[in-house]
Length: 130
Length: 332
Image 1: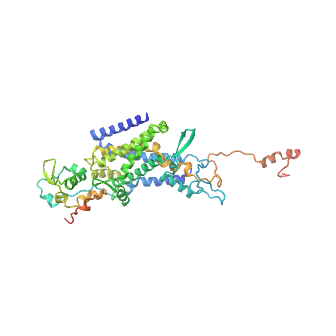
Image 2: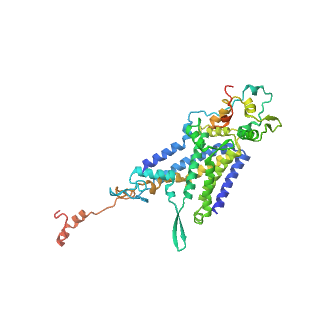
C-alpha cells in the first residue's frame, strides 16, 4: 500500500465516526421509556379509556392536539366526539392533563428520550408537582 | 432506458418490503437481519475499496492547477490552488469537500451565431449538489436521536436549528424540503440536458431514485402516516446495543424507510457514491504540486542495469586514447 499512514488513519477516523452509535451506547441498557399511567385521576376511572386507542395516541397524539388547537382556538368548537361516540371537552389543561397530570412521568418520558421539545408549555401552564 | 430500469428496481424493492414486512409480517428480517447485513457490507465494502485504491501506485504528481506554482521567492504562489505543502493540500481538500470548489468552476459551453463559442457561469449543479449533500448530512446527524441514549447535545442543537420553522404545531425541517427539491433537480437536469442525458446510466438514476424514495418515505412517515417513534427508538436502540428487539405496532412505512436505507448502505461501497472516500483519494486534489522541489521516484521502477560513462571510458580507454578522443581520466 502506498501512503499507508495517511490512508489508513483517514479510514480509521471514518470508521470511528460512522460507528459512533455503537460505541456511544456501550454498557447502556437503553430500555424503552415507560410513560406512567398511575395518576389518581386515572385510577378513579372505571373504564380506563383515552380519547383514542393506545396505538393511535402513541403515534398520532401530536396530530390530535393540533386538530384540537385549530378547533378550539380558531373555530371556537369546544366539543370533540371520539370514535366511540363519547364527548370530550376540547382542552389540553381540562381534559388531557386532568388524567395525565404527571408530565415528568408521562409526557417527558418519551419526549426526553427522543429529544422532542414540544411547544405546548410556551402558552399552557405545565402541571407541576402533581 | 436507464430511468425505466431504475424505476422498476425501486418498485421491486418497494413491493418486496411491502409484502415482506407489511403483508407477511417478516419484521425480524426487515428490522434486524437486513439492517445488520447492510451495515456489515457497508463497513467492509468501504474498507475493501479504500485499501484497494491505496494499493495503486502514484507514479507522479498531477498538477491540475488553478494558480501560480511556487517558484522564485518574488513570484507570489497560490497556496491553495497550487499547493506546495501539506497544509495547502489540506486547505484545497477541505474547500473541495465542504464547498465543492471545483464544481463551482463549472461552465457551460454554447455555440452562438457567428459561429462564436460562449462560456456561461453554470452554478445550478453546484448549488443543487451542495444543498443535497449538506441536507443529507444534517438529516443523517439528526437521525442520531434514534441511535443514542441520552441524545447528545449537538444532535438536539442541529434539530433545533433545522426545525426552526413550524407546520401547524410541529417542527418543519428545512432540510426535508431542501433534500427533496435538490434531488428532484439533480434528476431533472439529467433528463432535460441532452448531453447529460446521453451519458446517464442506470447507475446514475438508481442512486437518485433510491435517495428520493428514502427521503420521501421519511417525509411521509414524519408528517403524514405517523408511526410510534418511541417503539421505533426501541428497535433502533436494540440494533446499536446488539440486543435486537422488534416492538409491536410499528407501521409498515417505517420498514419501507429502513429497507431503503439498508439498500443504500449495501449499494454504497459498490457504486458512484464511493466518492465519499474517493474525493480524499483524488490524485488531482490530494497531491502537492512539488514536482520541481522534490524528486518523485516511480514506485514501479525496477532496477535497470546501466553502463555509466566512467565504466565506458574504463572499457575503451586504450582505443579512445589511440583515436585521440579526450578522456576524463588520462590514466587508469
